Image 1: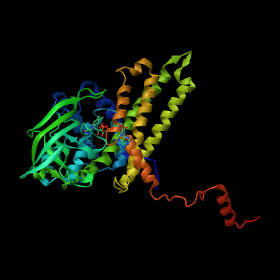
Image 2: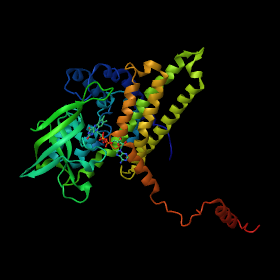
Image 3: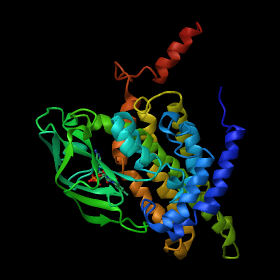
Image 4: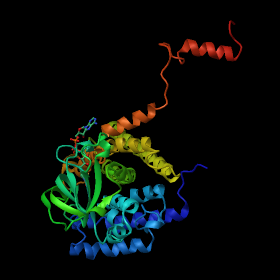
Amino acid sequence: MWSFQTDPDFQTEIDWISRFVREEVEPLDDVLGSQWNIHDPLFQKLVRPLQEEVKKRRLWACHLGPELGGPGYGQLKLALMNEQFGRSRFGPIVFGAQAPDTGNSEILAHYGTAEQKERYLKPLLNNDIVSCFSLTEPQGGSDPTMVTTSAVEDGDSWIISGEKWFASNARFAAFYIIAAVTEPDEENPYRRMSMFIVPAETPGIEIIRDYTFHGEPEGTHGHVRWNQVRVPKENMLGGRGDAFVVAQVRLGGGRMHHAMRTIAEASKCYDMMCERVKSRETKGEPLWKKQMVQEKIADSWIELRQFRLLVLETAWLADQGRDWKAIRQNVSAVKAIMPKILHDISARALHLHGALGLSTQMPFTAALVNSYHVGLADGPTEVHKLVVAREALKGVEPARSPFPEYIAYKRKERSAQKFGLSGE
Ligand SMILES: Cc1cc2nc3c(=O)[nH]c(=O)nc-3n(C[C@H](O)[C@H](O)[C@H](O)COP(=O)(O)OP(=O)(O)OC[C@H]3O[C@@H](n4cnc5c(N)ncnc54)[C@H](O)[C@@H]3O)c2cc1C
């Protein structure tokens, strides 16, 4: 069976989400600070009631299956939802689907003990707390084999020492999931790190600075020093040397959820660009009548449509029971093209709005900066293109002669033979 139609019952939900996000959630972006600052009294007052409405409608934490307290609608429906609530900075948290808590909850669900699930996973899924994922270090992010933060065994504990940065939400998090080297002598560099869960109140965690990106209301990306931070042995998630295996649990879904929200952000820029070119006049006619303006609209529509189809196809493949690893070519293709889509569409929208487009009154510069964020986080574009190419070339055999079998004279010979036309 093949269909591009959303089933009518779920379409009703999408329509509800669309209206709810535009009327109730988007206004939060204008009046609140960081969406992870859940202890802000205004967050409690304005966000909590909206989260309750979402829960009542069974649209809460839709990235999770029923065993983890979500409705488990699958990735395809999640994509349709995300392309609505991804319009707003507060959309994901109102729907219980915000990074990095989504990925961290998947790690805890897979590798946490019963006690850890009770202590960390349960309140995390309910957004009573938020969390932080801390891997990147100042000397290298794209290549995690360069991590130097270490964890050394000491009796019943591990002692963690080192420095991490761009640890998003470090200052709001109730706990960290952190990767540290435990097997420095291991030959395979991908088996040297282990993953730990560290409660935020543990002595020795020092946030020395917070970084801010353009478009964010406040600095939340922590530069964190780990001064002999002691955690009990059972806080290791997975086995010794398993950090890369554990991280894989969060990466596939994480990359796709970013892509789903990117459709929303790019669509929002596209809609504004369309309204602007219909509204503005120059040289005696509306802007949209200029062919070069029409080209920008056409290119944006086509690119957005292509990207959305790739995202939906990849989500559909995941729903067919293929694990993220099995569909890594698709996931990396989505990841590699996502920054370009957001970059090109937000840049055109900015340009067509003139000076206003460049100002902070418009969302385009923030979207433009975010296009670089989605191109960096979870692996830079270059690395994902390598994956796409490597997978594409798997199983492709080289030609045995300098004259490939598809050269025209050989093909014609074979075709003539097939129809018994040789020599005629
Ligand atoms: C908004 C934001 C939030 C973040 N949140 C977190 C977080 O919560 N936790 C966390 O651990 N990290 C986080 N990060 C960090 C992010 O994971 C890193 O920025 C990313 O891994 C890239 O590492 P880097 O910044 O050190 O860049 P580098 O590794 O220095 O790479 C710089 C550039 O070098 C090029 N390059 C790198 N490798 C290759 C290659 N193999 N082939 C060709 N070219 C290459 C690419 O052009 C790349 O953009 C966040 C980053 C941003 C922007």
